[in-house]
Image (cartoon, rainbow, N blue to C red):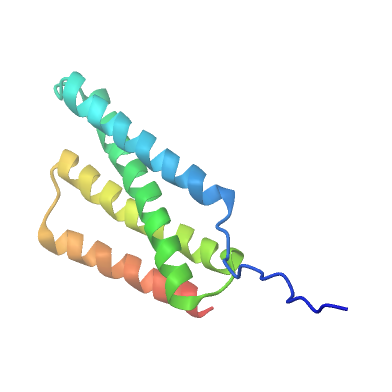
Length: 131
């Protein structure tokens, strides 16, 4: 009887389908931002708010994709373990850009305010990740 080698299994960890959806949503959000940038006049407050929301949505989905991929490569843990901290970090990043843009629209933006906001969000992330 002839002996054969066992079939080789590929040890690749396939990414969950939600990663592809997040990438697609990032492209769509950047497309919406570009559309507002090119075809809407920045004179009205509604257009400015739509611009800021589209920009923050694009930042959120892009940061989510990047934080997920970095966490997956750096830790090597399962996708479920890496996904929720990536969502939290992307949310805090988009909140930072949204708050600084709104401070700019209202007229209270300063680098000290932006630095304090970044420090608060960074300390919030450290507190949430150690729990």
